[in-house]
Length: 460
Image 1 (cartoon, helix red, strand yellow):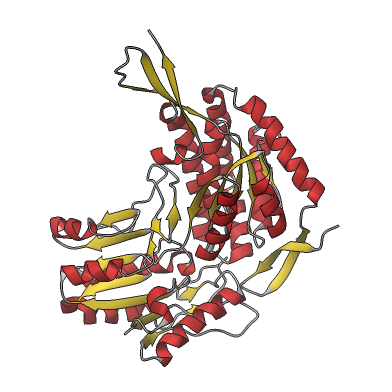
Image 2 (cartoon, helix red, strand yellow):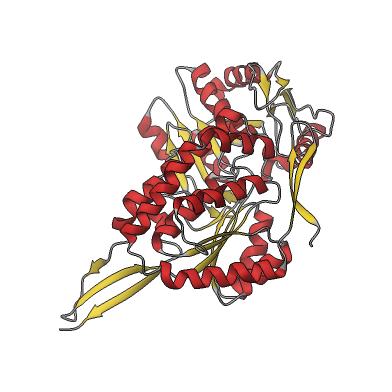
């Protein structure tokens, strides 16, 4: 049997709770065979019948939200209320595609100048590989799985090594909802086995949500094997504040979004860009919210406490980025304390004075660190917002919505928002440009990736 590589390690304590063996090569082959075999029948099930099963999946996520939340909190340290909310959000995603999927996948007639009738059909393509991360153990899977189940594709799912219980819980939900055997296959694959799966002729595409480094590896393997890929990667999203008649209020919005999921979200506001006339007040208010916080149990969520990061290594890596900035002249206003191991606590921080010589300027800070920049004009704000290798999302805030919209139109991102931190919902497409990856999930575009857009023409 393979050595255990998948394990539940509670980041609040550093304790290894449970270990799981990686899949054998025989199990990987079984998953590939099952996914291909199931596709032959699943693609022919009417989409309205597939929708009934996907609706049952949605209901089970809602029914088991508390149980699923506790699993996530134990595995990666997410505050329990956020974890339960994530499970409930999955219900919304599956329900959205169950409800809207039939119309989103309907044939689209196009104008023909040849006299006949031309339509574009949206047909499934076959078995897909999904490679999912630890930061949103259920949500990331839902946004990949829901539209593809509706389309008639089948799925092999490789979850993060630190989230095996979440992975198994999702498989259990799929089975109980009536998803046919082989349509959804959880596999505790190794990195070498991932390469084997991508190269296999039975796999028609791969979707990865993860780091820029992981995206480069998977994108290269997909390209070498001529497989369609969707890559949802890192981000360093700007949160631009042009003006405000309620600085504490806009700071509440900025801080709440930044520390959501303990700062471990691809599209969180990692760079706060603030106009000079309110900058000092903004930083002072932000600092108030970061001061005096203590490490706490994410299951209890006591007031004045913060949750651990996902792993000790993640906390140490973030600390190194912050210390690099401080050593080169940046100002740490609050937080930034790496607590003793083996737990993964890093106190939420406020950092200013970051310059291009520092790692923190261009690297993604994947944790609870708010970096604030001062600007003197709308043009400077837009230029700074775009001075990044990433292009996932961003937002612009002002009492003058038209002014904010003009700046937001200049953002080189996949998701641009005005006077809201993020437009979030099952109906809202998610994805980026530049080194944040390519492809879209959720919303109408979520059913447009792994699909054969076949021209069907009937002559006169």
